[in-house]
Length: 319
Image 1 (cartoon, rainbow, N blue to C red):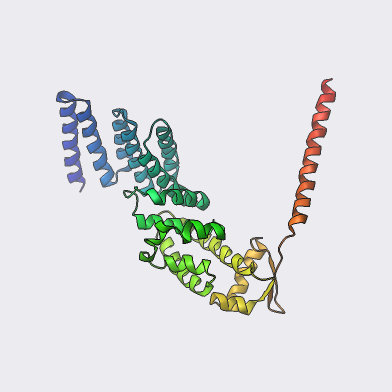
Image 2: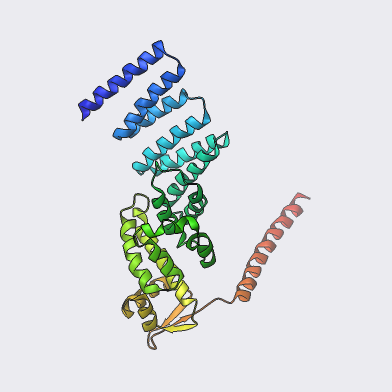
């Protein structure tokens, strides 16, 4: 393989030399691009990025420069080099601001969403994916079905119930393909319809897919935790108090499992509830909105008074 690669690269070098000596600037650029694409194909990250950078120096149009930027972003994503992806996205946004066309701007949204998803900003990723699904053209990155999969996965733990219904559950772009993606329809609709036992079964299958995903596999535990918080919060919002056995039956799990889960989230401050283990009851403890506003006003008022006192002291010292 090394010998075959060396022979092919020698041919590219000869083609570049011939173009520089006998042909025009466009042919020279095309020769450099062919070499860069080959290095990209064989997975030589460093050499490919150097070759793309050289090609960019010989490129005049903003659109062609953005295409080169996309190629380098895909290469960095394949190696999970997210620091380089962040730098590449910044450069691509600057190119886009200087005259990128509509189609490439939409493609860039998908690349940014993928980066945000890989760096655990699920809310930012969901927003960009939702903006992109109607005009998706980034098939070089992943398929449209995969884009819908990511859209649903990032939306479930980040959108409120009303937004989830309008933007995801009823979205025509999602409805056209969601049934073709295993377990995804049940995962989304069972949660919205409060069919928690079916939701947990589908969620287990979705978690297996997340475990094997290039963007999300590092965040499996975080994702599972966030989705469970959403499901438990949605269930508890319907009750002032409910028995542990009823909640366990609703989710299709044992009482000991649901008890252990809720304790962890309540202690972490993620669920506004408390458990009466003796009576086997969970009581929700929704905060009083007026009392919270009063405490906030006191806190901000004290901060303002402290700043005014400091300002008054500065003025007195000055004059």
